Length: 279
Ligand code: C2E
Ligand code: CA
Ligand code: CA
Ligand code: CA
Image (cartoon, rainbow, N blue to C red; front, side, top):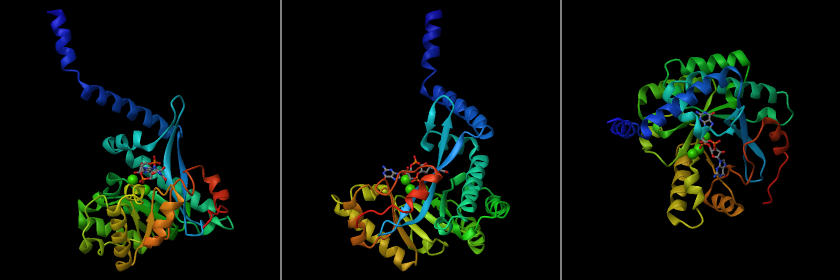
């Protein structure tokens, strides 16, 4: 009977429960991490056709005392599910704004916008716009140098409040970029209602661009759409010169990817600025 009980127990202790335990452990760890400053932002350069720095995307990292550097895919979903994304998201915005203020003293980096990823739950919180404006005024960062990256799925859920939130921030100078573009559902009619400065072509289209005619066609369509709606286009995940050249041929003039620089500490961008990739 005892053995059967153990078996039963084992039967009813599937992956689901261990996953929940693992999530609870990550959550507890993250609470500690927030107060003991284990999070940091890395920055990845965004460049033009000459390889000149035109922007940077802030990407969060977790410097864990025993586990080393943890990538966001391992903790952002937990932060979303638990609500920790709210304090974490505020920290990310404040940190990025402080970086903008620091760069405002720099002869070249003073004009470089910083893109910050905003998660669904964070964006749809009723205080989101007020929080962003408060962080901007508290840090003294220039609103027009802050670019918020949101994803398509984020916009669909509540169109009216989405438009309201975006317009409120846009009026104060904040810019928006639509991340991972092409992977979700977007209709022309709703895209044109959004105050978007930029569409970001998802990495998945760039990856097979040279071998897959469909991907090239999709990118071409995105670029045409951007031109129609008066939005800038940036391609992410650019890893080779061949990809970049093909993107230029299709009409994309802004790039982000390992070809131009990995995400790294803010100081690395001071060098990045002078980097030129041979045309
Ligand atoms: P994302 O916003 O699409 O960010 C781009 C990801 O692609 C980054 O991964 C970046 O390191 C990676 N990447 C850049 N260039 C290349 C390339 O040439 N090739 C390939 N294969 N990958 C490239 P990372 O930093 O691991 O971030 C993953 C995701 O985590 C992000 O995807 C974003 O959704 C989320 N994330 C990162 N930082 C934040 C943050 O501060 N807040 C929120 N809410 N989410 C974040
Ligand atoms: Ca992004
Ligand atoms: Ca992306
Ligand atoms: Ca992506």
